[in-house]
Picture 1 (cartoon, rainbow, N blue to C red):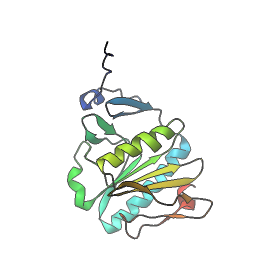
Picture 2: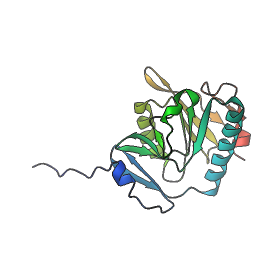
Picture 3: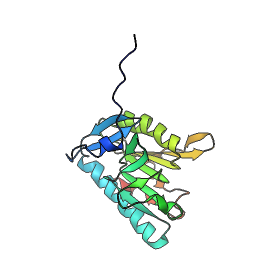
Picture 4: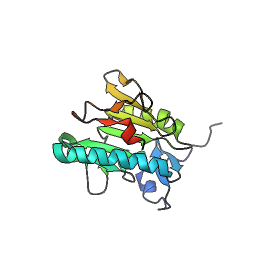
Length: 185
């Protein structure tokens, strides 16, 4: 006796999800929904977005985008990262409606209830599709985990902490430095 096939969602289904203030995503055909972020999450997102935007205005080597903004990795993999960066060299994936393909950098800011999805499910998804860097920002612990893509998959860089007065930087953004004290204020 075979089990009934579970429902698999795709981009057409995604377009029908309600505009209800919640984040709707499809990963491997499964629907994920999270409530809108809290104030601390929004402040961190704004701080990082502003720092990256100001940095990129001068360098003109890419663009940063904030959620909600659809990233279409496949017909059954549609996500809305908190922040993402697309380098100028890969600007062709930016369309009027969304991003068509993996960004160079994805940032997810943990919220209550998203830890497992962000740290396991999305990490595997972004690795599979070739996102060159994946930053996981933890507002409660005031830390950042950075995963960098290599030929063997993601390798985790040393964790950055507010307590250690670390600064955020990336080989994808030469010259960018952001003290974590500025991020978590």
